[in-house]
Amino acid sequence: MRVLRTVLLGVGLAVCTAAQAEPAVYFVEHSVRAAGHGGTLRSVGYSRLTLEHGPSGELRMHARPLWSQQRGGGYTRSTDDLDADDPSDAAVIDVLAGGLEMRVSADGTPGPLRAVDADAWTRLTAQRPRAAQALVDAPQSLGLQARALPRRLQVGKVFTRRESTPTLGDIDTRLEVLAVDDGVAVLALRIEADSLRGTGRQAVRLVDGMPLDVRLRLEMDATDDMPATEQSLRMVAMDLGPMLDLSDSGATIAEYQAERLDAPPFSEQPVDPALYDSDSPPPGVLLADMLDVEQVDAQTPRLDFTLEPRSMGRARIVLRKRYDGIDDATQDDRPLLVARVRSVVFRDADGRPVSDLEAVPVGSTLAIAGQWRIDEGEANFPFRLHPGTRTHTLEAATSIELGLDVETFAWDGVETVAHGDQPQSLPRARIDWMSAQRIGVEQPRAGPGEMTGLWTIAVPVDAEGRALPQASLMRYSRDNPETLDWEHRHAPQRTEIATPAPIAAVELRRYRWTLVPRTWTVERRDSVD
Image 1 (cartoon, helix red, strand yellow):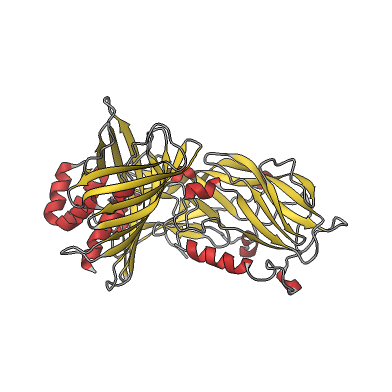
Image 2 (image 1 turned 45 degrees about the horizontal axis):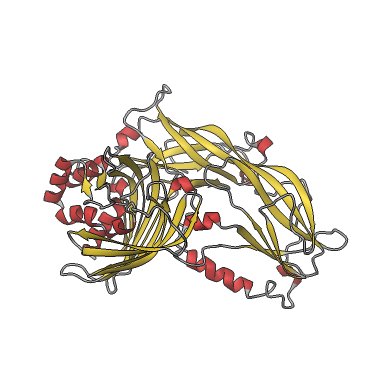
């Protein structure tokens, strides 16, 4: 497994070679499996990416890795484990701090991926040459390059690209346009080289050909010092508000839902009444997991943080809900609080920002309920510190100031839609009248950057206007493992509904959701209970 550990260091840290005009955070997941070598190694991480345009049309793409974690072979390692006092770790830290860059000529030909800090690179290649080479030879760069797209793209159009690389030779890429919408093209990719084959998809921004969302599956042949591997790669811009499945269970969810839809009560076979839910709140009442916009401050949980020492690497930050003697049941009954962190400031005992302590929000969503706790070792932690941050620097912080957008709800109204009709108050919503006791309800998802919108629940009623018991299933649209988050976000949200009696009409109950800006101060405590 040692040879794969070296590869994994590279794929975990050299995460991307593509960026947007403004710095943006990307999530990257990479899995490597070699038969007979101990299972699958999985890496997840975040990188901040920047694209610069040169005067002659060339591009400089810069990637600064923020955090990565590798699991497999019975071990877990992350960039938090790097020790700035260890010479070889210090070289890795310096390379990451300088970042990696790729220059692309005006005709779209990419140059080599290289470290910006040449001195740190020289030290790293002397101390850990295999890790250094993996850092710039990582195969995931194949799917993340800027694309020199034809000026006019049409669905079905096919075009090819060839590039020469020092390690893999000539690489031919076949691209087919699957969709063009909202300034983005979705492309199907097929990659061929002497020792490499791959397929996948990209969502590419038309204005500059930069990928926003990528999924690839690669097969690499064995070499003198490397076994044959099967690899999967995923990259997505966090600005898109992706649906991160950090458990890597997308295929399992799709299979589970398919089984449910093929069984009672959705199959319309005789069923037990206990399979239906009859606990529907009356119109005008928020659901139990909706935070009332009028109660956002009263319902805000109190959080604290601590520094958790470890045997390897620096101490990690732990965020958790604080009770302070308040009845636990009272707090646990509060609605689910969903928020996204947009700014982070560490402050010392005098309220001043702590110098040399920069935190970068990564755009992941916080879902706070019950006895909530999260630490930096978890992939959905809401912000990241740069590799090489020292424990004594963290110890200067006595509080963290979080700027957040909190999801809230308010009642908006109801529309009753007779059997066979379509909604009028929600022009982008649609009811699929499948049978007398089965319907599907579709509605648009929230788009990136939207701060308010409507969310609708469907309540089937009988001829007397009484709510019917129902079984419902919110569809997970990623049935194909190569489906992109961009496609998922642009597809309507569909909910399957079955009832034990005929449906005369459907009440579409509308709720106005709004992201409310708030600032929370998270105080430090010296221990975690």
